[in-house]
Image 1 (cartoon, chains in turn orange, green):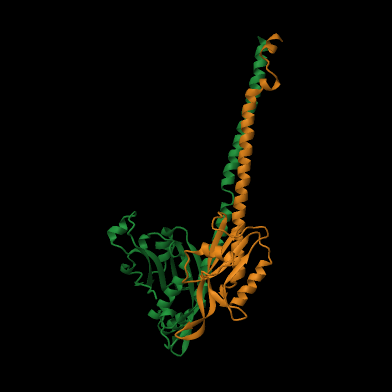
Image 2: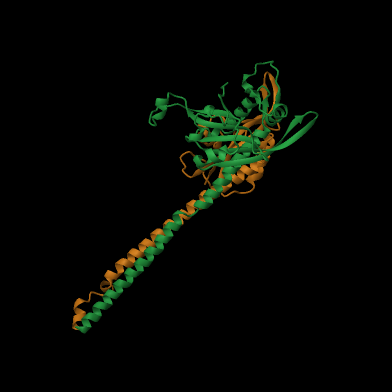
Length: 185
Length: 249
């Protein structure tokens, strides 16, 4: 008994050497656990964004042929009703367009500035030129910005019917074009 | 003495328990970590392959919808008052097949321009081939290759770090005499291939009657790289290729 009391430094103090591995274990477990949750969350968001993009693109392009601006706009209004989990913007570029300024074009278009005039234009029901552009902003999400790291984009080839002057006369022709989609949180 | 040993054993047992606990936790977390870093990879690959197949099929659809000038020229070249003859690209292909079973230079030009426009967003990163092959006999009507080629001096091209190296998009229109060229010579060396397929019926005039054949329309894209079997295509007798340079308006 005398020997016991001599080395006794308290109930926790006596177990200190065995507490160290336990603390390390708990620290390790919760670190990896939070990392796991973080990776799950990131991957799920990335996958959901990809699915959103493909789903939006399939709804908007239909059979890869857009016959006029009005039908594009009707589809745009329709997909906005679906309440997607991410915000998105879709624009159609002419196949000969400039694809180096895509992000800046979307940043400007998100603010309602179409002065760069890079998107393909179509005639609305009042015969006015309108850019082929569709925007859905999820409730509570911020505007699209170049500095936001968490955006994804996809490109699809499509055919667009439009009026074009060829050799001094106007014709309705079907031309190749490019549908660009940006999705962000 | 007996008492001291028993007490020491108790202390070591507690330490041992915690070390075993640490070992178990470490193995569980290691398993969790390796599972986590691979989480979603397969799903992502699957979703990406949906996109890739959507892209290839969309490209094929676009080729079948497109209007072109019957001269094969770009719309921008036409002067005011010049006669405009518009048609579907697919109609031109069918017409050429019915007449001669080969594509005319005008149709080839229109086809190359359409493919180039359709694939423009991926022009820097991807090479591709587009072809029509007979479904039953497996012989090619044509195969079109869009490749990146160094157009500078060969000594400059060999130097990977040389900034003066000029790499341009070039097209080759080929009529391969061998049916399995793509499968044997290109695909094994091209890495991941994204493919889209469609079917068209082409009819040939034989006397007063017509004979129809089903052709498979294929589009394959792969990351741009040097593939030995696609080097010096014009010298390849089996493929019978002609280089096509797209003029810019």
